[in-house]
Length: 269
Ligand SMILES: Nc1ncnc2c1ncn2[C@@H]1O[C@H](COP(=O)(O)OP(=O)(O)OP(=O)(O)O)[C@@H](O)[C@H]1O
Ligand SMILES: [Mg+2]
Image (cartoon, rainbow, N blue to C red; front, side, top):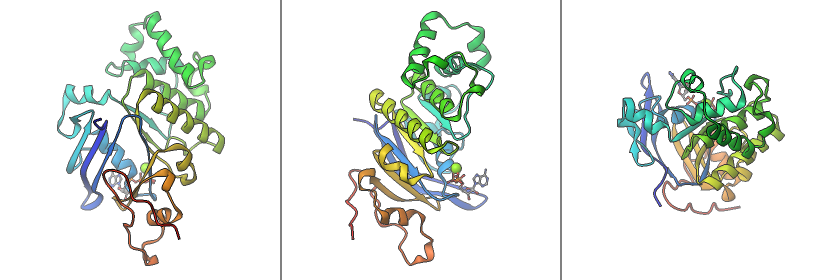
């Protein structure tokens, strides 16, 4: 099986300072990967490079076999259609209804005004409604996005990715602004949808305690480098320290890194 996302040797600097260094990993269809790391570790930069919003100085990003770093214009727009995006600050069109936001995703290649001007047909609306139903929001389909709670807005974003037939979802701190119960609910929905539809998910989180119940695998970034790549079932307190502990604690920075294939079991004390 080919990976949906393959990141190889990604490197980038801002004003001379390295923010990503040699970051490499693959994500398979249906695989849910959590990305953790302290503030400033490079998580958002990694996401921006993965959508080619930022052109990384080094490395490649292949989405469904196409190298985004080398594409431009129409080809890049086509390739980006494979990617669903979810952000911390709900990236919906606020004045549109939930269902219209989903429809905008389904026709991601058209500007919003054209999507609405072309009056989506009954079949398209039915499909969008199904996607909202899947995330538990069938009854709020006609509510304006800005009248929905944060958790509901993130569910609309998941429905939009589903309607868009995204093969990859990138979610940058999608639950950072939510209360614990809504956060768990949104992540559970995201995981279930990913598993059912073989969508690869890469999701950054600050709430490390949510990783185990959500992701299949956890990647740790620290100062722009991958210092961890383990199945989340094996994610141990030492791993947390590898990612977050102050560097002057005497601990070597990379202890449990396996870029490809199954990761070694962490040694428990
Ligand atoms: N546009 C930019 N210009 C210059 N430096 C930037 C820019 N964007 C990010 N940086 C720097 O790059 C580093 C990584 O930032 P990034 O936003 O990727 O971190 P992050 O892991 O997402 O942090 P957080 O958890 O706070 O969201 C930081 O040192 C940041 O100051
Ligand atoms: Mg960030």
